[in-house]
Image (tube, rainbow over the protein chains, first blue to last red):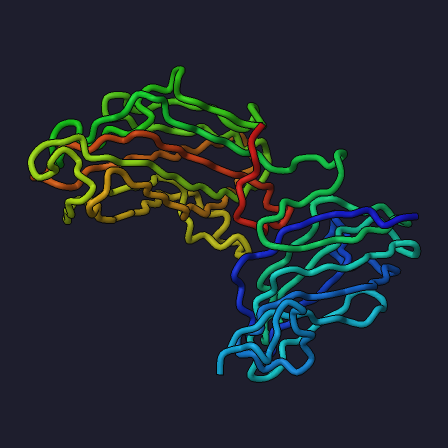
Length: 70
Length: 294
């Protein structure tokens, strides 16, 4: 079965500092409890790295580091 | 130097997490994931949570469309997206737009009798009132002379989170010092005072004691200055409120615009709006965008 495309909001301009966790979860819509048996794939986070020091960040392909002003 | 980029997380059973590493700070701009519920024990809401370093959930953003057990969904979370999916999604919010009539309202200098004439001094046509839920909202005025506009909210046995914003476009209507509204002339000292009256926004919805507190008055002030312009928009987006009442209680929300100047001339309100959005508290309201009211 093809995955249904859905959209949802996010809090805008929410700066998450060290130690904060982004958790992607499937919740029971009635109780709010996690629903077992759901698997996740192709999870991607597109973020602004405020200090530019994340070493596991795949750069935006539109940015060319060598062209950044010194 | 800030930079944008992508972080990929490994496939696996939900939940999956990403912890912001030491000395880093990030602003999520979009999160995408495929939820495969083939083996799910029941229907589920794809959800993103932000959890503080102390383990406290600071934001929980469920997709407003539930995925049935056995179903799958690819979900994009991003600011200013409305929850939902295809054409079958059901609105879970109640929105209200009030737009002013074309007739301008005059604001005399404070403290004259008409000091707080608002933009909505005629709630009959052509003042535009639009909503997607006529059972939720109705309108009345408490004082047509001074023009308070009140919303009557039927809580419909639900707890609601409310968000409201207002705006108006002001132009000097001529007089001393305004030189025929010459845009090249700079004027200082005219202030627009916009205020709300509504429930107390300091109530914490997660606090059972606070959320059962009866709504209280809340006033928000907007001050600004007109400088060498023909007209200007002033907007206010600051009204968070929470109503935990489960009966038929109703509250009001009012909006005044006041020319606080005592010496300068009249102002005209050319147009104005008051937009209110209510979302059932159980849905986890997450974006600040106002849906388009049909």
